[in-house]
Image (cartoon, rainbow, N blue to C red):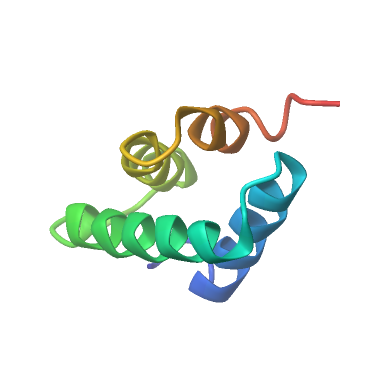
Length: 79
């Protein structure tokens, strides 16, 4: 991923998953599959914006857990 370090993204996702009570094992699976699919989806782009990255990851997360995707999409807005 060009925009952010993959480890940083995974760490953010782990924090979000824990905040909404997703079990660690399930979160790990959701995160791994979502990040892998997002990377694949964005692979053809020469320039990846943060918005592109966030949308790709949240779209993939929706397949596994809608609440998790919602929290990730809105993490900058949630207080």
